[in-house]
Amino acid sequence: MSKALLEIVGRDSRLYIDPGETLREVANRLGIKTVEYIPTVNGEVVTWDYKVSEEDKVKLIPVISGGGGCIICGETPVYSYVGRVYCKKHFIEYIERKVLNTIYKYGLIDEGDHIAVAVSGGKDSLTLLNILNKYKGELSIELSALIIDEGISGYRDLTIQDFIDINRRLGVRYRVISYKDVFGLPLDEILRLAGRIGAPVYPCSYCGVFRRYLINIGARIMGADKLATGHNLDDMIQTFILNIVTNSLERILHLEPKTMSADHPLLIPRIKPLYETLEMETALYALLNGLYPRFIECVYAPEALRNDIRDLINHMEEENPGIKQVLLNSMLKIIEDYKGGETPKINSCGICGEPTSGEICRTCAYLDRLGILERLLDWRREVGLESDETIVSKKLHRQESS
Ligand code: SF4
Ligand code: ZN
Image (tube, rainbow, N blue to C red):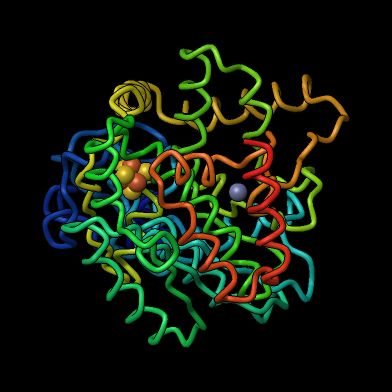
């Protein structure tokens, strides 16, 4: 008696079944959920009560993405998105290849580069660190990691130890730079000080400016050629929409996967290798690789408007899968069409010498207002960023001009 052939679409598997069984019996025997497939025989849709005949060609077509197995090997999927269904092994390969493709496509890394990864302790930067570490041979790069300890109790203190543990596990050289060491106070105390003297108390304004300042210096101290950050596709399109609703259109032109055009000897070029990777993908990748980020938010309220935009985009994505990628493509098209050839002018801060678009960098301006600028200048001297003479002459220059 000739057997019938059964093909399960999406699982890449074919097997022979005995005539006389109903399709429901076959499905039960194979552990296939009948609600997840449409049965067809010889090209015609049938019911699950169809009794299989000799030489039938039975095909089970998944009704939902993810209903079948991994599209490569048929194993149980862990990921399903716009037709891509992957098991753990093939999902990990898919993400790693995607990140490498982004690196090659936008020319983010050159052979021999020393890349410093700015780690926040969250899923994105840990995913990035893990992937660059895994492919450092293929990319021919030297790798190190940097974390800024802002001094936010209940948040950063929990992630610093994770950062150290992960770098030790991966064998990556790392450095921790703290606000307390550099500015003399952790962020929590800087905010209390600001409140006491009547200065504005916007945690993210201070924190963002200080953090950008220190990751650039940290990368330089570590001898890095480029600084890699964990910004993902969701981050980019949220910022894109945020800039539209706040009428900051010129900022959109800076949302590229690499920012290398600014010309200043102390400015380390920045790259975003997760530019085309979705937030949910980095979260899943981190979990599957045992990176176990804490998934905790900073205790200071994050930007409310950005959260609204994130919710809106996620809602749109649920209704129209793939729309996030379309938004990213639109943003890239705007950048390509409107970005001029001019390199932005970058000055040296009149106090500390770091790159700034104005005359005094915002870090020095904030610290000066808080009355704690001297500690920064001492720290710079301690770590050998400037000779005593340079700082003294700058201080004198400042006093004379004030
Ligand atoms: Fe800093 Fe604001 Fe981010 Fe908290 S949410 S880490 S205060 S920038
Ligand atoms: Zn400065």
